Image (cartoon, rainbow, N blue to C red; front, side, top):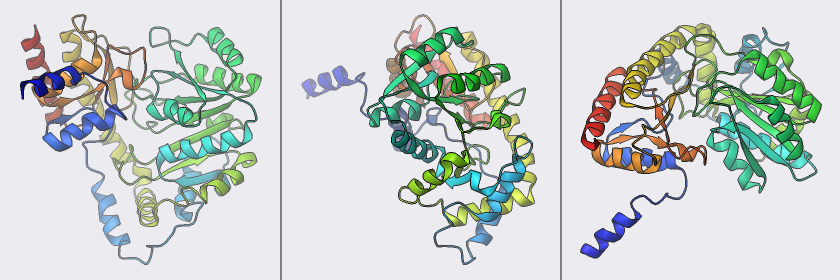
Length: 389
């Protein structure tokens, strides 16, 4: 029996197979605790949205939705984005969340890019950006930001040219690091996409989750190299509904839709109809979004200050669901820290290595939880650090 315990201790800090997000989140689901690991909201969706869902469920709308998407929802999206560009319904495709949108685009890109190519995203990178290229046996480049803030554009241009980068992913605010890219930065990248002939996928899933200034969205520069993906998951706290959308130039969209017919087919009809009726009746959810932003900023502030006092080094964060933080100097292994923290205090977080091979001493904390849960997490974190001094 003692030998078995010894082997378990040896394997205790071995990197588990698969997603570290699933690994730590599943611990909470199985054994309890506070889930600051998975990027899911601890907030309820709007009550009005759920009331509409109950009504829609009684309608005769339980079969396949149109492949393009719910007609009313498409009209609402066109109206919502008219300040940027004069879109029409053919520019949009409703899909099963941003993950499907990214996967669908990647299948399309893999068909039309005729040579071996690389994919680039800014380090630390969201897991789909780096793992989908691996599935297709493409090279992925995690491009570093200087001090987690600035882009060395000379280095970026050289890297894109030398490594034959044909797809660049960018999210603003980002995940796991909530950097909001400036208009100048984004426009330089758009100019580079024309100069160096690569596709730019702009991920706006956290578009409405900002703390101070509204992020710049480059749809005023819409062109055949720019692809835009978004979803209702975060803005309405409905990550389980899996309803998102993409915008693409008419040069590409029909072929993308042809692929979609054989991969995703359509997003759930009942949920599309529910979202459409809610957005139409409640001004695209503006009141709920304002409350949501205030809640997230409060949760951010409650967790941010104690982390700094404990000794975490935190780069500037302007939006999103997360605090991206470097461990205090006495810790140098994020995976070990995350495992020990959960075993000791039942607080689940994500080691930085899930997002970057360079982030071995970083941790991602999900702040999208209610105030009392964040406060309890702070209490347990302080207890953990007091016991490890």
